[in-house]
Image: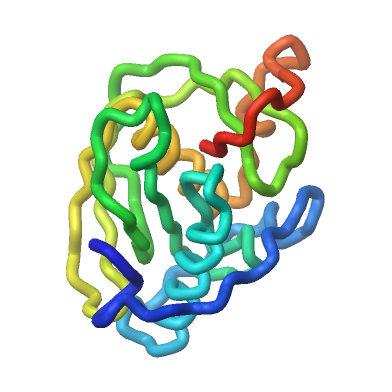
Length: 179
């Protein structure tokens, strides 16, 4: 699942939008994973992620695109157990979630804060690969599951702060690992 489509595409790294940018609170639209514009957008998303070494995932709205695309790569994160690889997914849908737990999250769109967020630690996601349109199923656990759910929230116009029960769950960011 490396790369956004056939040949991987190089893409262009874009700036990551910061809250409270309105694109971050909008619901992203479904995409045609075989559309050349979507393939180019997927390549840009992946190029942007690759340019942020402390970030493990990004969603299209974070780079100003309204399509339902996410990219993630949790290989370098110390709490990662499952590893689907470097992935870009079109129209991802959470179809199974279990074993809920609180964990610390940060976000490339929210500088300086992390928070304890309740998420499933085991998930199943259905999606399509940009380029080929091939249907895929991702089963993830631990940190990779958290990262994917964080990106799915971005597609629905939610930030991790929207899932925080109160101010006592917030923390000043001491490191730069993104969820």
